[in-house]
Image 1 (cartoon, rainbow, N blue to C red):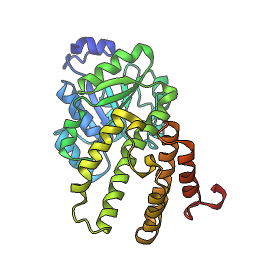
Image 2 (cartoon, rainbow, N blue to C red):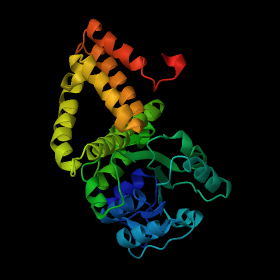
Image 3 (cartoon, rainbow, N blue to C red):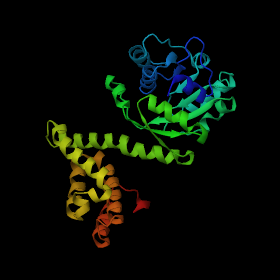
Image 4 (cartoon, rainbow, N blue to C red):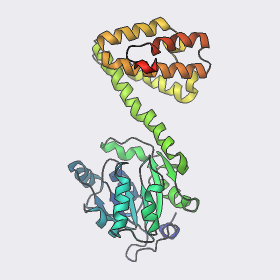
Length: 314
């Protein structure tokens, strides 16, 4: 979309000295904000200011947003047509309302936040000041490494907006290299919980498995886990619960019991996580028909009787 049309769609008059650009400010030049700012700059926008408190943010801004000054949040808003709010979930409400209380927001501005947990409600103080507000969450993990910029290419973005603002939201996502999909305001919390379950908990599971292999004397756990976990992930994505393999899917109570005994002796901190995941796996296998009721019941009895469980949950 030509920049002039983009600005009109956003309700913004083109800046007289840069008619093809939006002046972009990034509040939170962290792992996400700096990458999105760089993507908007690559799309032809003018990143004019950023804020970031940590030394890591300053280093990242210097690398990804060279020449962009680091200033306080209210100064970022004052300098910008488009404000990117890339701060932690719990920080976002206070930041938006605080900027509103000081009169920083102005009518005609465009703002989006990158939080998966929040929708549009958190931006209400800005909206009341006449800001066109959007929620654009990249469903991607960012580690702060240089390759983060490449991860935006084709990355899905969970978009929440008013219906009339959806074209603006989708245009911005496409300009950053992403692929937009719509998430209703009421579904935002569940959407984010799903991503956390899949991505954050996956890292924990992989690290836990690697630690157990090291305890078992395997020097290079990644070499063992990489092909196995790659195949398991592919099965899960393509087949869902039908891709389940292993002792739970076979109803092997003896094997699961032996695992519990071994973990209790060799890696007691891992027992509770094993029990929780084995129970949920059993429940899903039963619901999907992978296990018959008479096969799943002994597994659940074993897991519910584990000494790691509180007495009132047995």
